[in-house]
Structures are given as C-alpha cells and as structure tokens.
Length: 469
Image (cartoon, rainbow, N blue to C red; front, side, top):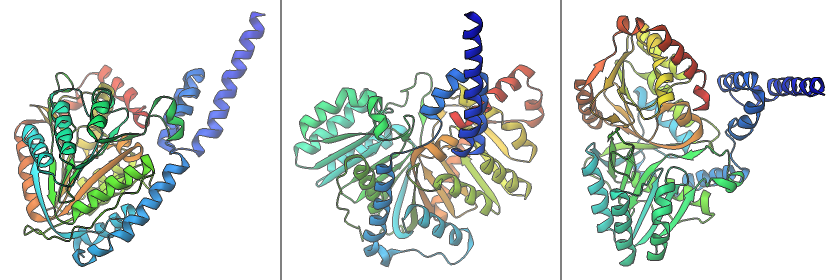
C-alpha cells in the first residue's frame, strides 16, 4: 500500500513537471518561464497551483476589448486638439513622439504648464485646495488610499465638494486601497461621491483577470482644467513604518489635462461600463511645455512603459538619469543600460538606500556588479524611502509618473507616465536629481565586489524570482 501510494505520488510529480514544460513556455516570456519551471521543478504540488493563479498575466476578454474601444474613442475625441499638436522635427523627440502615440493613443501637445512638486505635504495641500476650489467635477484615480490623516482629509474634501453640487468620482485599486475603501467608501457614497474599486479581488478576480494585476496609477483631474500625475498616493508619508516616502508629482494645466481625463474615463469605462464625456481643453498656457501621456498595462497589446523607457535610454547621447524605488529590470532594459554606458553616455541610477520590499531589494542588488562593470553609476539616497519615479534624457526629455523600473510595472500593472519635451522641465528635474545625489552614497565597484559570498547567494536566489515579483 505504501509502495503504491509513493509510486502514484512520484508519477504525479513527473506528470506535473512534464505538463509544465509543455504548457508554460508557450504562454509567458522566456524569463518568466524559467522562474516558473524552476519553482514547479522543485515543488510541483505547490508550483502548479501558484502558476495557475499567478503565472500568466491574463485579463478578461471584456477588459481587453473595453481598453481597445477606449483607445479608439481617445483617438477620435482628441481631434479638436489637433491645432495644439506638437510635431518635433529632429532629435530623440522626433522618434519618441510617434512611438508613444501609437502605443497609448495620445498625441503630443504644446501649450501646457508643468509644476513639479517634490514636497510631500505641500503636494497634498495643493491637491486638497484644488478639490475645495472645484465647481464642476473632481476625478481621482489612485492605487493606494489609507485610513489615516490624509485619507480623512481627502474624504472630507470630496464630501464638501459633493455637498456643493460638484460631481465627484473616485477610482481606487481594490487591493492597494483596501483600507481606504473599507474605512471611507460608505461615507463617501452617502455624501454623493461615486466610488468604484478597480480590479476587485476575492471571488470576483475571475471576472477581471489574474488576481495580482493591479492599477498602480496616481491621477487627479479637477474641473478638466487642473491635473496631477506622479508617484504619490493618498496616504501619510510614513504609511509604511520606518520608510517615510519622498515623491515627485507634476501639477499640470493645458490640453494635457484633457488627456489625463481621458485616462480616467478609460479606467472608469473598463470598471463600470459607463462612458464619460471628455471635453477637450483648448486653453494654452504661457509656459508652453510640450507633453505627451504614456499609459501602459496588461490591457494593451504591447509593454508600453518598458518599450518607451528602453527607447529613451537608447536615444540618449550625453546623459540619462533614472530614479526609481524598485529596480528589477528585464533583459531588454539591462541591455539598454549596458549599451548606453559602454557607448559613452553618462548613465546615473538613483535608488533608495532603504526599501520596504525585502525580496525586491535583494534581487535589485544582484544587478549592481554587472552595471558598475560597464560604467553605470549607482547612488543610494539616504534620508527617505525614495519612492519617486522619473528619468531625464540629455537636456530635453523627461518622464514623470507611476512607472517603476521593474518587471511588475512593465508587464503587470496599469501605469501612467507624463513625457515632457522641454529643456526647462528637464532642468528643474535635474536640480531635484542633484539634491538626491548630494544626499546619497555612490556604490563603489571594488567595495561591492568584496561583499560576502552569502550575500551574493541571497541576491542570486532572489533574482530567480524576478518575474514573479
């Protein structure tokens, strides 16, 4: 009896391994397939159910079709903005603008104003003041909302706005904002605010997509005249104990606000089936910054964020600075950084010295040695958890938004980026980057190579799970 049971278990183990070898490589990327096959090979009875739950970044057909329809609507309804289309004639922008428009449907426009907010409390005060000044509508789309002082302040501001007749809609990620939804959803709805959870979990996940796909965007649109986009959530700076966040948010005005409203309307339609009217904003700001929105996520046919980041790195001729809290690149991004550095481009990577994701931090460290070897400079910012996400290329292109330089942001999360084709914006971000570097420790290649063997092993093991993070 024992022999028969053991034989049956052995046969089952090998059947699972063989089935995984046949099934997994045809349904995911080679890098992800290697990670999953390794897990299934070691623990078949655990690896198989985990793969079935988390292995393939699938979305329901309905969500994919709704995204495609939303993109078609965006292309159609932004036609009144054609007079404000910005058409670069040469340089990296001439290559990037068509790529981004084909990916996410948004044309580049001029006539925008971009204010960069890197003070955490000041950024929140500005958002709350704009909500309190709203006369028509307030649309908020956020990954995370906590039941803390910031959550209370945002809830109170929305209730006040709804009380004076402003149309208020709030989209929150079902997992990231679980605490905020639990604490405030009923109160907000009672006050007249329309609240919806994005990518709901639990038993509802089968109707939306793979259960760990998330909407990681941070977007606010007030009266279709003021917009916010960046890395900051609706929570206290210390919502993760011991890791006070530092962020970067862009407060924008001009035609790009209509594009942010289009992103909100698309996500609202995907979640609810309701189509919102978006009125193009034809006002021109005196600052006259040329911008373009980069939406990305698993509902799109391509990995928009990854391809844009890699194209920007390849197009750099003098300098590229990349700031991110989570750095777990795929092979294409790693190759782009290596080629740029070896070509003589000054490549600077700014990371946080502390990290609220331990496994990610270990995997991140596994890339340092090969990057340092080809000339990439790595700096670790000390004072805060550097949660800001942005990059600058040469003197004329910047990207600010919610996009991390990791496989999760590239393939699994819905993200948003604001591309600015403007030397003034780049100079302002460069000043912020210089402040980071003044308070950071450079990773020394020789010292890093002397780290103990157990640390190398830990990093290597964590890196094997890069596609699972």
